[in-house]
Every structure is written in C-alpha cells, then in structure tokens.
Image (cartoon, rainbow, N blue to C red; front, side, top):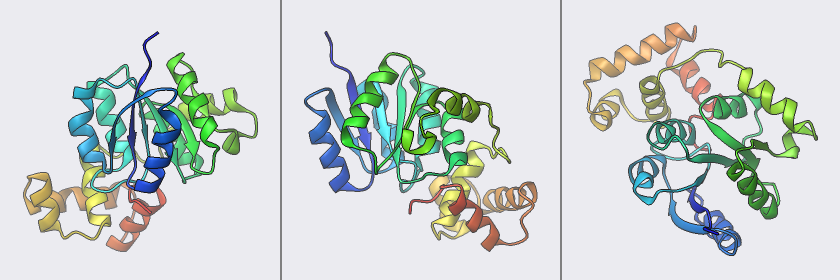
Length: 212
C-alpha cells in the first residue's frame, strides 16, 4: 500500500527535525519548509497527501498559506500543529479547510493518529482542547463565523504591517503601490472598528496572524 506523502512546515527547526524523525517510519516525509510563502510556492509540485503546518509562520502565516494551498490542492489534508489554544483560531482554521488541529504539547504519537484519521476523510482535533467532545466540538467550529471576514489581500497586508514593516516595504513585497496598502489598512480599521494602528497590530496578534 502506498504510504501517504507528508510535508512539514514550521519555522522551529528543532521541532521539525523531531517530528520528521518520528513520522518517517510511518509516512514519506517529502519536504520541510520554514515559512508559509515557500510552502505555497513549492508544495504543489510535491503532490502531498497531508501538510502539517503551524499557524504562526514568518512571511505568510499558516492560515493564509493553508487557504491558498486548498485552492490549488483541493484534496490535500491540512493538519495544524500549533501552540495556539484559542478556539477562534481553531474555528478559522477549519473554516478555511483544515482537517486536523493539534497542540505542540500533544504527544508525538497523537500526530501519527491525526494523520491516519484525516487520510480516512475524518476530522481530528486534539482532546487537549475538546475534553473528549471531539465530534460536536468540530461541528461547532465549522459552523462558527469569523467576527470580521478580512479578504486574503487584507490579511497579507495586516501580517506584514504587524511584523513592523513600513507601508512602502509592504507595497514592495506585495507588488502594489503604497497608496493601495494605505487603502487596505484604513479599510481594515474601519471594518474592524479600530481607532489606531496600534489597535490593528493588537488585532493581528490576537488572531495569530503574526508568529509568536
């Protein structure tokens, strides 16, 4: 039987090496990535079955990366492995196409179990968050709406601004004009009912758009 092809994406190299060593007896780990942008660029050519990724990653966070990957690889299974225990973040992950959600404090064997579950077209979320109410918890997460739905471009702008980049730097990275970046910034502030740039950055941190 063909072994599932796995990609690992996390900017903490020691953790990646640890999980890679643990997974290789069970699956084919075909690549590892340290940022979301490289993951989105290179993963499609590797034809993965499952991508295990963190929520908080540099350049492009895991939620945006996962959303983009599901657009080009609709059959790929996304399993988030993160330190973030916020149910709203988990809800957003599932809303954007996740099949699994685990914490980095979970046992390594749980990751193997989660991958096996998603390969059977099931959803998986760690009992560390659900206290045994896995099925109903996942259904509730999938039904939940994000309080304010930002567009993909808005999320990209917000992440870069929250990383401390100037509007000019953001414009260069996204290949748009500074005026366009300013438009997105102030549109988000109005949409989210925020009064200052500092509140916008706090929103980005709270919603895990910036790596911890």
